[in-house]
Length: 198
Image (cartoon, one colour):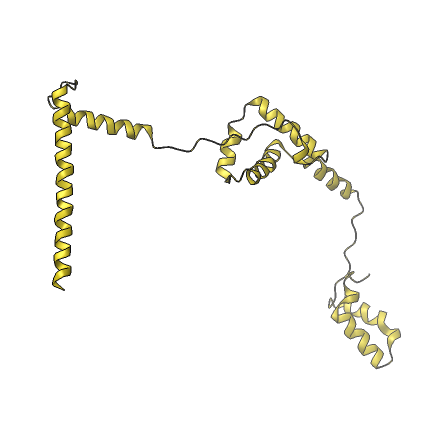
């Protein structure tokens, strides 16, 4: 039985050699090591596996390679940096989900070229990175606002807004706005009066 590969550089081995040299017993090194192994004070070297598992591991790592998703991710990150456009993971997924079958086949081709050792920047005809449109104000809520405004202006509730109703509604809105301004003026005057008292 042999000791582990790292044992020769270990503090334990250095101590054993120091003591043996000090007392002139260097020739008893093997006996001490055998005794230490039997007592399990030190560990034996693990036997190397020579059953061919290394080729299986190499084959698995070679088979794994890049997928169309990882090829897309790699290019999206480069594109993001070059265009100064941050892309978070959710946006990446949304863009990828928008690709049709032909574009996904192109990403598979890009992955194959990456696996063949080509640099992502040198691969031509990659599918376009199409940023999703920013989410604007919800159209439904803006339509509800218009609907509410219409219902408020339709005084006789007949579903038709005539000129008189429109003008009356506009006058009421102006009056409300003016009253809001008057309220603000009153609050400002009250605040100024408090400051003047101090």
